[in-house]
Length: 438
Ligand code: ZN
Image (tube, rainbow, N blue to C red; front, side, top):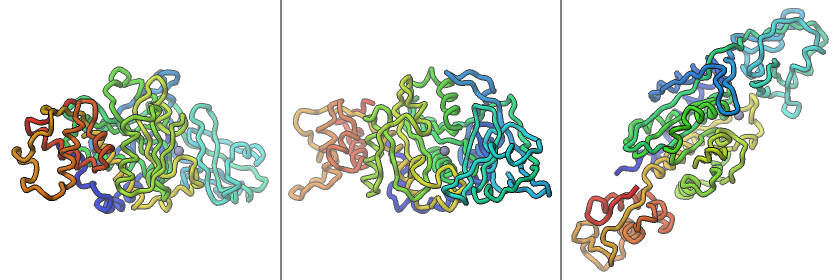
């Protein structure tokens, strides 16, 4: 048995990946994504250069639980121009300028008519807000409050060259086949336009994790899902309901690159293995992390942890949504995400998956008194000195392997690094002393 991601075992070994993660997030950043459309497909093409993806197209109008897959939205250009022809708002300058899912518009109107369709942030007059109108047909523009205040009475030309029409919703999966059908799922949302932390950073970390996992031989099948928030996870659950019992563990990765502390939000279950493993990984690496209780707001946990599924899936971010001022504005740009923060997120996620994959219950085949380890070549033969950590781990695994305790239970109880415990178990499994049960 080998534990996944051996080369990411230490935080310092992961640091080198930070610049690569930042570069990949930078490639995703300019793309105008939404919950459907060409931007999502282009994003998935970039991710597909790192790991083999299976892309799924779900037609508009498909019923999914209490929802319906919406029409597909694509935008080519948009602007507001004054009577002199000068563009006072220009989609080409920043894709946040157009409310996502705006219906097509081609009109001339007064400032008073235009004004209800304009959104700004008076508290941050230099930032463009991010606004959406997915499920109610409307149109709008977002702009810096400073620019809004400069708009004079005039007749404005308003153009949104977009289509909102039957098409499909696109998501993709990278599946790393394991020794069993039991699955670990990793979700990352793909629906935001030019916002770096939310969620180019999360997609970059999840894509790198998938690439690294594709080089491994996991016990569980690892399924990385890149889908739009809310409707994407609803679609995924609707299409996978029959096989949802295979999901043993899961992690949602988002907002993975800002300088806030790593933040883990527990699953609805609260005591799932992933809820114990993430704090263990943070503590073992000396990372100061925050642990949040479950709440029914956020990203894919809203669906994956809905009561009808209640999957053992937690969420790893840095600053959580709405916990940073730049959230959902143009200030969430590439300067907000840091290579070191991205690398830490990758480290934490990778080591969490490694433990979730390797954890198992074992049974001691010779539980009456200690078996003799020396004659099996497992224990140093010269006595008198205190045993090392590995020898302690052998004793802990044998003592606790009554079929009820898992190797992660042993690591928690003993305070010994999970990887040392796992290595001891693997050595014992190669003898007549220990059998893996799950
Ligand atoms: Zn968001």
